[in-house]
Amino acid sequence: MAIEEALVEVRKIVEDGVNIEGLAKILEILKCPFPIEVLEEMELYTEYLPKNTEDNYNKEKKYLHFLWDILDKTPMCIVANFAIPFRRILAKKLFKSCGKNFIAEENVRFNVPDNIEIGDNAFINKGAFIDSKGGIKIGNSVGIGEGVNIFTHSHSEHEHSLRTYGEVIIDDYAKIYANATILPGVNVDKQGIAATFYMESSHTWLLQMQG
Image 1: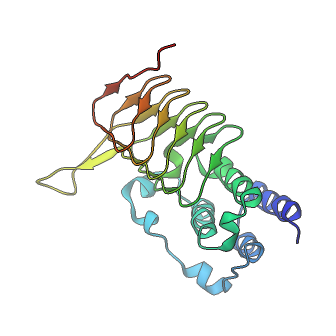
Image 2 (image 1 turned 180 degrees about the vertical axis):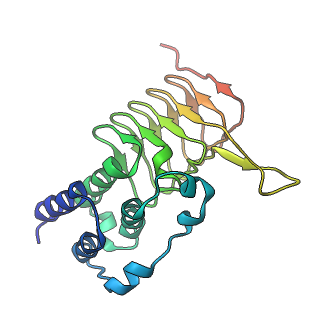
């Protein structure tokens, strides 16, 4: 099956709503077929997270999340003209919202997809981790570099089960460079920059390009 034909079939399955048969078909397209009985019994770690049990993490969301992660275990993940559109197709149904021309590279990970909002022309590079338990909004034309970690929740030091949440907002045209860390509650203002290996923990951070 040619790449464009494969993407057309994936898009139709996802737009119609992914059930167990649709999941199995997409896995065949990825050249990593699973027995139906395994797919029916599988559980993902993210299903046990409190925020996913509270939110709408249903079977379809689980299947979409599984497909997002499994792509990076296949050779198809480095076929850019397949992998990038494939992730776009999933993101439209998986995230709370996702704008046009979204690009996610290999091994981008997240935990609560319903709490992710992405604008137009956003780019996330390889190996980024998005802890979206507290919610994250990524604006238009935002660039997130390799190995970036974004956190939106933390645990109490004296009682691990106590959690605090802080939404992260990355405004339009902001750039988060490689291996930077963004902590809960941070707002990266329009055109803001987080430097490589930088850790940002303040509530509102403004480092704007002058021009």
